[in-house]
Length: 385
Ligand code: PLP
Image 1: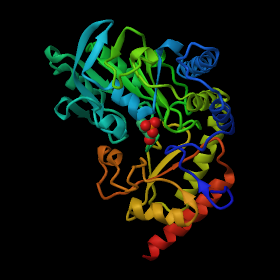
Image 2 (image 1 turned 30 degrees about the vertical axis):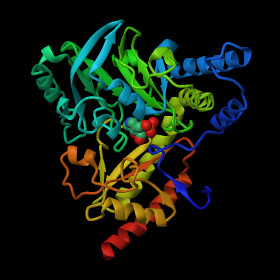
Image 3 (image 1 turned 90 degrees about the vertical axis):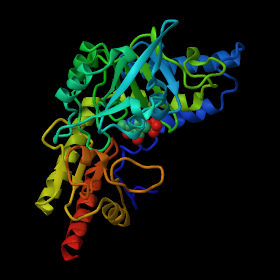
Image 4 (image 1 turned 60 degrees about the horizontal axis):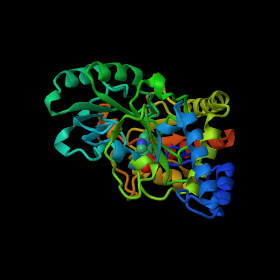
């Protein structure tokens, strides 16, 4: 896919690999040895893995010992969402998972909880988790079955809407619960600090930052309270996640994590300028475009909109034919475009389709212009139809 033929506006699905990440991957691929081996080759790779841990820890302001590498955020979610915890060596039960309606499927599926032990927490029309509803649910939680666990994402992948995680943490901790925060779409797009958020665990993913796919991390607040492992074996990652580490993918993750922290404010100012121009242009082209979440706090790069009468699938194909890669919300493995569960949760009619434009550090004014030209053609064709 060359830049001249195609306009890539789907950074929330995955960010293009950064040149620095590619270089790091390629040079690590040539390193011989297993990071668990005690010989010099193994030790060199161990040093690389531990340096990556420091870079990833810095991304969310924690200690390197709090980072457990996984095959991505989905695995991290399945590791952390479990009824079975340990406090040191003592088993600790989690009785129920409360997850916001707008969570990514990686969380919505409930990990290792049985379906009956998962309750969805509604969101307001503005796409914000309903704090009163959460409080009521936690008040009614039966502690005899174990602690309550709450999962609320920091930035939504479809709308970009930022959730009031600190306020959620206050409620969860007042009820003696654990807070899991999916920070996948927030890192690299806004400052993320596990301490300031008062989260117990964060999940993050490399490929949303310009690192390789298939690598991510579970970040814990401390080292004492930990989930029972999902993958057992040779005891890598202090027994929390067995299996030989993938140093090449990790090296790419570290490069992306460093880039994500560099110049964040300047990058965001530029990207939000592009997003504003894009949204202003859409409103000028038609007054019936609905831009979801525009009145609240959003990450700078995301615009989720609906054109009444235009189905997500039809819109996505129309833009694709115009040379523009955007998405109808979350990227689904089957390639199917379903109804957005986020729009439904926000109380919109189930027939209203949503289309997501997500920008990144390489996005340009020319990308926005090409999008707007295509948008005008899609709008005219919809009118004609
Ligand atoms: N959580 C959110 C908010 C996401 O956007 C994604 C990716 O689409 C995931 C979790 C899953 O991440 P991964 O692809 O690393 O499994």
